[in-house]
Image (cartoon, rainbow, N blue to C red; front, side, top):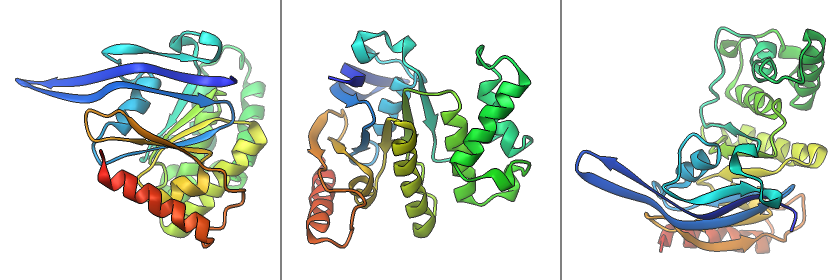
Length: 251
């Protein structure tokens, strides 16, 4: 069914001294190619843990994650963009983006790396700042560079953990529009954790809502509103209100 990611019945618990925290319990979901799916749920319910398991930064205690056509999760190319950009302060914008490329075998020459970095700088509209360092950039510009660095490894799915929550509303909307543009230009699949119902409705093809811990999927909401989305339209406002209510109830 054109799937890029299948999360199949995963569970995860954390043990601290004598206490056990069950974070995720038999959670399953599927993401299709070129979809933008937003993951929501009450604070602390395990949304970021789901992303970390998909990206192999954590291991599930049980269950499986695999890509389309049943490939093993180890073969699924994913990349993560965090709330904190995580750029290397001693490297320029160009060097930050090139960091992952220098580890890819097929980008074997300096010319190939430079060409790819230039393409990514153009994609995220940061050409003028290629030689700048992170401390010289605004928060929104840093996140653009973080997105470009993640895209450099050509992921099948780009994971984003509240990537715009620290930004002002104008910059947040600007970068949300960039996500939509990149999806359309590169056919990129996005899986985004957000606490913002308006952001989820503005971006998503589908919204997945989790329960309180231990998290399971409470509801999946297809978003069929046409792009670009009018956030002042009554049907859009009603959907935002529905999502807000479902997340707040948490059960």
